[in-house]
Length: 242
Image (cartoon, rainbow, N blue to C red; front, side):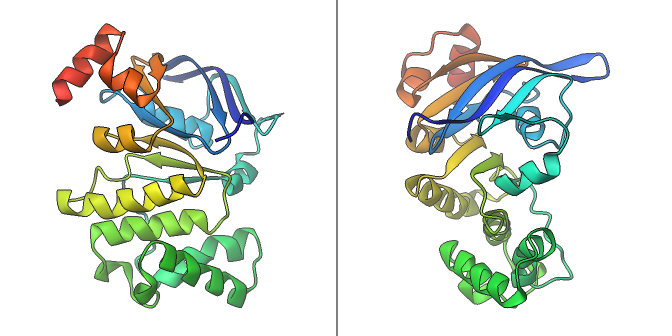
């Protein structure tokens, strides 16, 4: 992590009808930083990520990426900010290698052979180099999620967003996905991770954010958040987990 702010969120608000889900989020994300976002269901964690990536349109506030305010063109931004969801959204009729290479070929006009070579390297990175020519139905949930990570990395993003990447997995498959994310952290990838895996959040994060009722109620190092929480809702949240 360095002292360069790569992403700045200023006074971010999001409404669904009359329901205010995000109530003025302010956050600076530093290059190479890993931030885990924790909180109860319905607190606004996933909505925050979806607003950053333009999948949900904010109602108020600014998103500034590499010093430039993001206005309407989120398509370009998504080339720079990759996202991995709870569910894998792989194309079932396409082989794994084709799922990974589709984005670079269509969006970046990468040559077929170059995209395939890059795709194989990414499959090696996530430990699935032997699955290039199979279809998603032949993979476990953990393997599908690792393919989804490789697919997001194929666009060579500057930031990765993970929205509860293990919540749809059987418990015995969680570790293989977290291991891939940990390796990305060691390599210096900037990441925002919404997670319920508190042990993982403690281990991998530079900072942990506790979101409550659409606001950042507390932010700090893993030690500060988990060992010396100040916010009463955070204290209750931690007690409910342990």
